[in-house]
Image 1 (cartoon, rainbow over the protein chains, first blue to last red):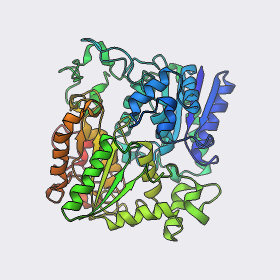
Image 2 (cartoon, each protein chain N blue to C red):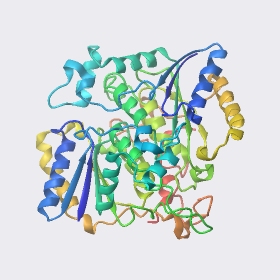
Image 3 (spheres, one colour):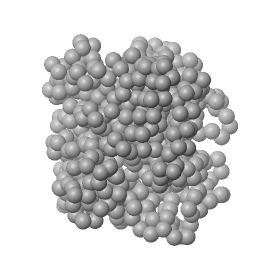
Length: 259
Length: 259
């Protein structure tokens, strides 16, 4: 396995950083290759702007078009190209971060915004009567797998199907489906540590044991069963799920799973 | 009305910036006071780190605790304090941004991550048998209203109840409910421009007309009917929605609306 770990926490002694370190040691000891993008340690540039696109930055700036032209000609900023190369090298991508305000920290969102350029992560493939571009199951990163390892502040009950925050699977859907599955990554069920702010050193061995078990079984873990866009489940070009494909009563994000 | 507009787009000639400018002129001409936080123009610092907390940055860094102590003592970084003051000044907050990868751009997430500190936006209020802190309808920003004005790349059908991206209301729920309603803001239905990358100058008058109409009717627009946490709809402390409160068949994020 070749694993890229993208890590987003400012404190090297935090629970998140410990879980990142444990992933590195566990996978390395198991004989796998690992690269780490430690975004805070790298002083990762977080915002999209004209400097990302070199000579292809137009005036006025057009983010999608300019990023695609810069990608095509190899003129993207060097830090973006390096991350794209790591993604192409990897067969597995792990994201380690705390859920801040129900989604990823800004520095990680800035990694997505800058690295997932046009013609790399979107704008890929042709449109026809049977295909609406290569995305949601196809695309540049097809054949690879992704996994979120997240810490959250509240207890598990708050993220349950009737919990006030909304179900964790729904909170993560825009990342799982909209960011990762979109350019072709298969998405494994997340590893979630609840009530992370209340954990003590006494809790760590159990958390670490669970995380190691997940890491050592990545190969045999089934991905979330998202529906592929171009295999007949959706009308094209409306991309409405065809009637009757879902279990009775299922609505919302859950429509887009076929299990 | 006192309106704060938080704007997140790198290009002053973009559709987003035009909508921001139109909001300023429309509200000003109608006699309202307006402040703008143009995050790119301000060179907004996007990432949370120890420099945000002045002398309260601990080693190792503890983001929640340290931010709360810095807030309490007035020692937060000056740019954070300025934004908190604008929020307290405003009765209405408008967020103008493009939906990038199904959520806000990194620079705006970094505004949330840094400005919404402990003891300001969370960690407010006591816990008891009938209250789980002041949040989800109560809190520091109670009595104020918020509105998202967003542009999205795909056509409306892709964001419909059966659309492949998921329903727009569900995609925005983590922002509406998790970020805005959490510290007490009432949330108005969003203003969404679909297929924004395909709009031409010919489309702008109709978009502008719709946006002006929304801006001039903010006062009479009903907020989204999210359930208040501490008014009896939820079990405490599990924060599960009590059984039988929702319309038959409603699941997921929709449980947390009482309409």
